[in-house]
Amino acid sequence: MAGADRETAQRVLDIVAAEAARIEAKYSRYRAGNVVHEINTAGGLPVVVDDETARLLDYADRLYELSDGKFDITSGVLRKAWTFDGSDRVPTRAAVRSLLAKVGWRRAQWRAPELTLREGMQIDLGGIGKEYAVDRAAALAAPVWQSCLFNFGGDLLALGPSLAGRPWRVGIEALANPAIAALEIDLERGALATSGDARRFLLKHGKRYGHILDPTTGWPVEGAPRSVTVAAPTCTQAGMLATLALLRGSEAEAFLEAQGVRHWCLR
Image 1 (cartoon, rainbow, N blue to C red):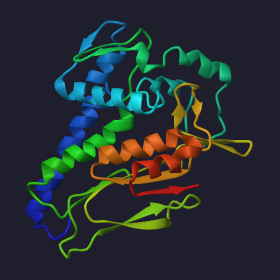
Image 2: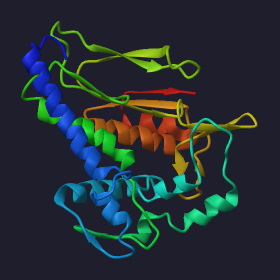
Image 3: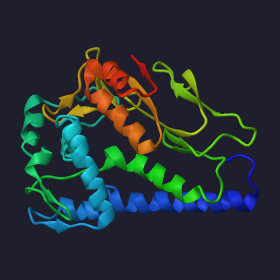
Image 4: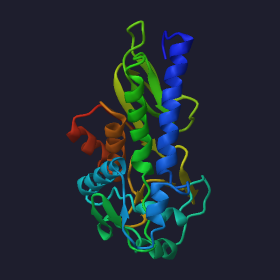
């Protein structure tokens, strides 16, 4: 925040922290007792969801269609085989293949507000949840103070420029050294989202396996940039475009050019 008095700054901080905590508690796949846990443990029975969750599922459904099935919120079950911790523990093809029967949004039945997954299937809203949290927090904070830059783990949104009228200077980390900025971007208003494999990858026999998985094969997308950053009016839009670009592999740059958005790809 720029120029806010202590009371205003604390008020904005409280608003943002409360909304981030609410969304984390409601949609984290690591929490018991929330709506995602209810869906994932329903054992093939239908679950009726609230309006907010229904909107997110509708959005996930649209992304599935736009990506020709590459963006799939049921693909999180593949993490039972993949752990992107920088090691060389690449799973066997048999281990990955055994999970593919539990992946596929089209195997689910979604007719708002009711979702039914086949037994053993799960959903994971991590691919859209953080960006949604940024947009929600910013919308709630906007009436209080607008000279703000929100940063949720590299997903950013500026409500407006600093009080001096200057844009915020944002650095995108270098591939070889995350402590160094490979490029700097001026952000006055709107969002930036970055997706890449700087911290989540495997490395075996000189081959790097990024964490973006193709749900149709169960394996990391081939030929994708190491990092994709996209600017858009909202963080949800920016994150969606960055992820869809990575899922295009070697065609990531062409995809982003076709969308007509500001973007930066590092290879």
